[in-house]
Amino acid sequence: MNLELVTQKLTAKQRKAIPLLAMGKTGKEVADALHINPATVSQWINHNQEFNVALQAFSLEALKLAQVQLNAMVLCAIDELRQLMQNAKSEQVRLKAVEMVLNSVSGSYKGNSGSSWGHTQVEAIATDAAHYNFFSLVQAVSGETYGDEG
Image 1: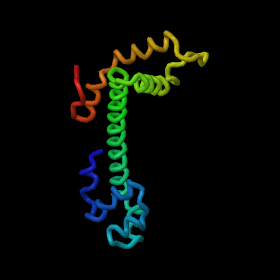
Image 2 (image 1 turned 45 degrees about the vertical axis):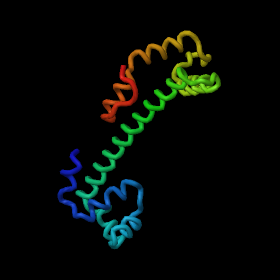
Image 3 (image 1 turned 135 degrees about the horizontal axis):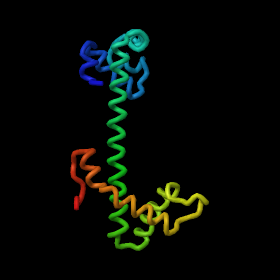
Image 4 (image 1 turned 90 degrees about the vertical axis):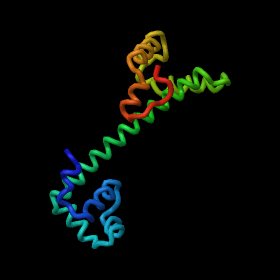
């Protein structure tokens, strides 16, 4: 749904209210911010279909953007842990990075019996890592380059 298209028929104050409501502001908070009567905001929310369609479209777009940004941050965090595991001068720092990685994926790679790490779990991680080029994913998601893309 094209956000620009669905907001065309809204007033300037309605367009300003949409991001505030999507962020979780109350009708009164939105009314105060826009210097309008709270009943007006209530009217928009409860009886204006075009306003509600625009609010829903904005909220959906904001949620998609937040998910993309969160995914990019996770990939950067993974890369940072990888760099710590490979390059940290302190053995304690390297071991802590390894521990963090193993703990974060242990639920995904435990065997059916609930046993801890074994050869098959490490193989599964290695296979997964071979299938994902995290740098390419980050670049595709964000349009920016992070680190070496080799």
